[in-house]
Each structure stands twice: as structure tokens, then as C-alpha cells.
Length: 518
Image (tube, rainbow, N blue to C red; front, side, top):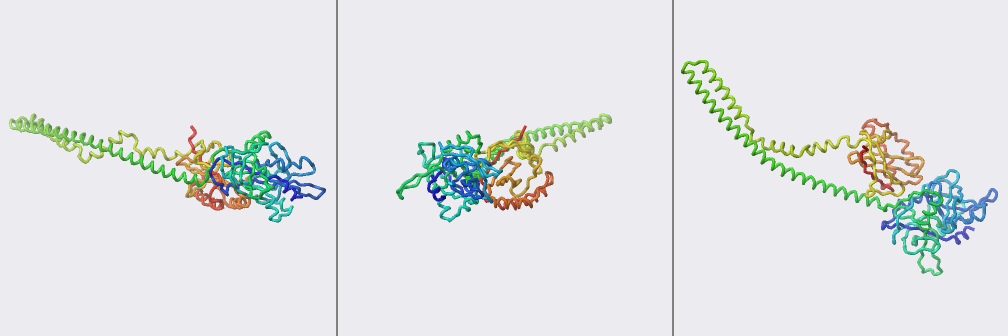
């Protein structure tokens, strides 16, 4: 019966984004966590028999999209049951059909009994001709080649991934589709077609049929236009993104080029400032030289005048002494002494030629206001503390599964985030590794107080890798806020045990520019 179903099922494929990027295996593997096998089971008493299967994918933790023809038998026989078999874990879930649209071959299933899946993200942008795509699902010919039994087909297994390209410009007459070349087989029906970032661009539905073995094989995927309308009609809010698919390697390369450009620009600005300072200093030195020479000439003239007056007063004192006029002699002599002291002072207080440079520096400082060094110091310090609103920088980000929203944060000088989470301090700065229990995603968050940059890197992990990370997390004790720099460094070092379990590159990187909240 299974062979009959596989022979009768029509295969499917999907739509792809308008981007030349090649598919990242890590992103395709991450998206595959939410690709499921949809099985149709017939129950008779205590026995159950699987009479058919297809593929599907989660659009929310509880809702699965598949083809209408995969679950068509359920509409004709109420003794049949739909089952969802995830790619990982220990078992499957029962599901019920909540929406059925044969017009465009779409159906929506809801998982029963509290089961949850990792939802895929939808691509809301325009698909370009020749875009790289991957089809993910459970082709029956692979199952037969492996010799899998019916019990094997209801046990969690990894989905099969194939790769091809979009051939835009052709669609079926019945509903809007995308033509592509990613190989699929009977059993792929209802599975997703993914772009290079692992986002859904279509739902595999059927393929070309030919009796000539030399004909090329092509496949059709239900377009995102049809899928989006179908989900809206059934009040299902799936995550969608229309951002370009930029690789982490491209982001790293752009950051390196930006850093090199910033360094070159900073060097040019420093050189321009130094040249301007040198020119200003030369002008100020000429001004200082004129001022000091003028002051020296004035001091010398005053000293000469005082010296002449001193000689006159001394001469008068000598004449009064010859005439035995004691009172006039004392007055004239005292005046001569005072004038002599003034002469010496006027001569001694003349500015030195060596003070020309220091006078020039004072002139430049007065003209430019606060010196650069003092200004940079004033701008630093605690500038990276307080309340901020952080806005995503799309040019430096790779967003595939997250919503884009502004992030309000509060940062203290000792590394406390939002007055409740202590960050660890390591060689790469302040960071916190988040390993949740409720989802198979690890987030590493960074905050740089100097540049006021907030970064979130997400790693979409498999179940086994996630369990290893959770075990490692249990051994790391986060200190309370305000524990001190030594504890923050110890915490930062302890988090490295979790980070060592992560892939070399994240699936998602979001960089935010943070501005102080007035």
C-alpha cells in the first residue's frame, strides 16, 4: 500500500529569493529542524497501519503546512489519523487538519497534545531567476532504497536535502507556482523550498512527468504569494523577512574593510589635524616672537629711563651733600636707590627669548578652546553607561528568524545589563551566553560601552547539541550584578565552556547602534 501511495503522490518544490548567494549548509540544516514527515494512519482496534505519507514544515511551534493532496484521504475517511513525525527526538505527534485548500494544494495542520516544533522563517522578498534553492523533505524512493520498514517511517529521522536553481517566468495555470530544478521525489510533497539563508520561498507540490528518460526534470513549488494569503486567511502569524541574504563571511569581510577604512580615515584626519596644528603653531610663534621682542624693547627702554633718572637722583644727592643739606640729601639718595631697584627689575622682568614657544602654545590653545586630548577624555569615561535605545543596523546584520525591533537597554559601568543580568568580561569584551530550556536556540549577546554597540548572535542548534550546551550551562554560575570585576572576569572565562560547543559561525547576527535616552 505504501508503494501504491508513493507511486501516486505528486512531488513538489519551492520558490527562491532574488539573490546570487549560495546556500549555507548550516542554515539549511537549521531550517530542517522544523521539516516533518506527515503520515496518514489507519486504526483498527488496537492495531495501526500507515497508508501514506508526505512532508510538511512548521510555520509556528504548533502549526504545520503541507499539501492538500497529502491529507486528502482524511477528508474521505474519518477513521484515518494524521501524524507529525519530527526529524529529531523520540516520537511524533497527532495532528488535525484545520484548513484545507485544494484550489492551491495547501493544507494546515495543528499539533495536538502540547507538541512544539522549531518554526521556519518565510522569505517575503522577490525571487530572482537563477537563485540558489534547496528542497527539504522525505522522498519515498530514498526510504525504499534504504529498506525502511513502516515502523521506521514513524520514527524521527533527518530530512533529505537537495539543491537546484530557480527558473523564473513560468507558472502553472491552476495557481501561482515557481519552477525550479532542486531534485525531489514522491513524498517531498508539502515540504519547503528554501533560499540560501534557510528561509521558505515556496511549498513543493508537483513535478514534470515524461516517458522519455532523456528529458530534464523540473519541479513546481507553490509560491509565497499563495502561501501568505492562505496563512492570513487562517489567522496564522508566521515570521517573515525580506532582508537580503548576506553571509556571515560577507559581514566579517565588510567589517574588516570598514575597520580598515575607518583607520585610514582616522589617520588622514589625524594628519590633517597635525598639519593644521603645525600651521597654527607657526603663525602663533611669529605672533609670540613679535610680542616678546616688543616687550623686551619696552622693558629695555624703561630700564634706560630709570637708569638715567637714577643717575640724576644720585647726582642731586651728591650736590646736596656738598652743601650740607642733610634732609635733601636723604630724599635724593632714597629716590636714587628706588630708581636703581626699578631699573634692575625692569631689566630682569623682560620676557626671555626662550619663552617664545610656550607663548605660541598658549595662543593656539586659546584660539582652539578645549585641547583635543581633554575633549576626548571628557567624551569618554562614563559615556557608555545609562539608558539606551538600540536600533538595528541592517548593513551589518544577518537576520533570518528574528523580528526586527528596537531594543531598550540599561548598562552600568560594572557590566550589569538592565539592572538584573551580569555580563562576563573576557578578551572580546562584555558578553552573556543564553541557553534557554524552551527552544533550541543559543544566543550570545555583546555590549561595547565605548562604541555603544549591542550585538546578538543566534545559533540554531540540533537537539543533541542543545542538550550538551544545557549540561555545560548547569556548571556555570552567573554572579549577581555588582559582584565586581574579578567575578565578572571569572564568569567570562566560565562561559567559554559553552561557547566552545557552538559552531564557528552563527546563523544570525544582529548589530544595533545604541543612543542615550534623554
